[in-house]
Length: 85
Image 1 (spheres, one colour):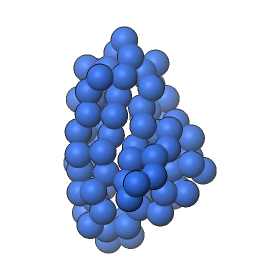
Image 2 (image 1 turned 90 degrees about the horizontal axis):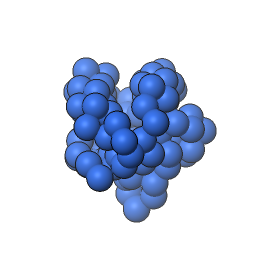
Image 3 (image 1 turned 180 degrees about the vertical axis):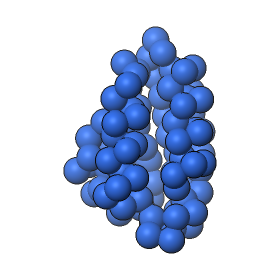
């Protein structure tokens, strides 16, 4: 299992556009990908669940990745968060 933490910098937080892009990026991998924030968690491949977390600017998220392509998923998602959120 791999994981990383990230503090959301986007002034609007994890809103619809980047959440949709995150779901698309997570869908490229077979690994199980979970995003946690504020004591709640959601599968990164499910848009409605991600939006339900209500992640705002300044919130810390933890992204956990487990599966056969976890190394590639970890690197790609860490880069995604840096570039989009």
